Each structure stands twice: as C-alpha cells, then as structure tokens.
Length: 232
Image (cartoon, rainbow, N blue to C red; front, side, top):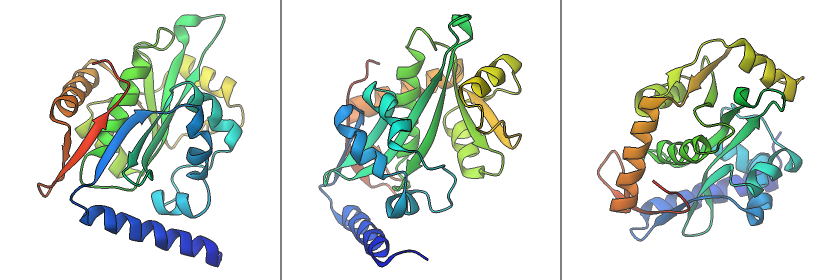
C-alpha cells in the first residue's frame, strides 16, 4: 500500500501539472545534465515521482550510483519547466570494449515523460541521440531497447523518430551482457538503431526547435522552449 506522504506528493505533482497546462506563460528548458542534477534526477527513479512519470512501471528503478556517471558526463537529458520541475528524463549507457574499440555502442534508455501532446519525448530523445552519436567511441552505434509490448514507445521510435529495428547482433549482445551480467538478456526486448534516416529527422526536428523556440501541441497550443548545449 502506498504511504500517505507518497500519495500527497503524487497529488501535488498532478496539481502542478494542471497548473502548468493552464499557464500561458509556461516554458521549458531542454538541456543536458551536470553534476548538480544528480540528486533531483535520482529522485525520479523511485517512489511517487516514478509512479507519476512511469505509471505502468516500464522503467526499472536506478540507484544514485547507477546514474551519477552519465549525469555528470552529459549522457543524460532533462526538460525543466518554469517551476524547475523535471518533465522529461532519459539516460544513455555506454558499452565499450578496450580490446575492440570499434565494437563500442551506446544504449539510450530510462525514458520517462509526464507531459504529452507536445512531442517533448521526441525532441529530447533526438537531442540525446544526436549528442551521443557525435562521440567518437559510439559514433554510428546508438541504440535503444524497447519491450515488445510497449506499443507507444515502438511507435515513437519507428514512426516519429525514424529509428530502424536493429535485429539480433551477437557482438552487441555479448558486450551488453559483459557490462550487465545479471541484467536482461531478455528476449522480449527489441533493439532500434539511430541510423541515417533517424539522424536526418533528428537534425530537422532540432533545427526547427532551435529556430522557432516552440513546441506545438497536437491541439495547436504553443509552448516556449529553450534548447541548450547542442550544436546542430
């Protein structure tokens, strides 16, 4: 049973979201993380905050030690509203092989968003993937793993983002298991690759956001956004 304090936190988060939707001056800052974000981001992965952003429990909990390195090294991305609340978070993990540097790849994961209709997840995923794809050790090798029954996520990656189903790759799978020996060699996960079409779509989307400074809701409402820390 959920505690009363957790329930109050969840209700407060829902009320804040409603106020945000009714506030015509609302805006978002889309940005890569730094060391100051470690604590606030870590709170997203447990308790009421996670229940509010991930009500179906698709994203596994992460400890502070799990996320501090990518957060400190610009491998995580957040969207903050004008109340400094996190409305989106995603983190990439790098899987590198010292003996075979060309085999290294990055997995974009832990995607959570509590603000629908604006294409916020698509924008932030594009920014994070674009940055990661520019890193020499993982250039051309950026992936995402999605549960086979997660239809909304599969639709986002294929239809809206243009990522390609990657299929099975023994080298990638072995490197993944080397880094996470107890984690999910799950057969109900699908790999998607940030290929040429996805890169072109990301460039177009991010350029439009940079130039316009807005995200447009499916009902026509416009939301001011500021995209930081990205060369396009």
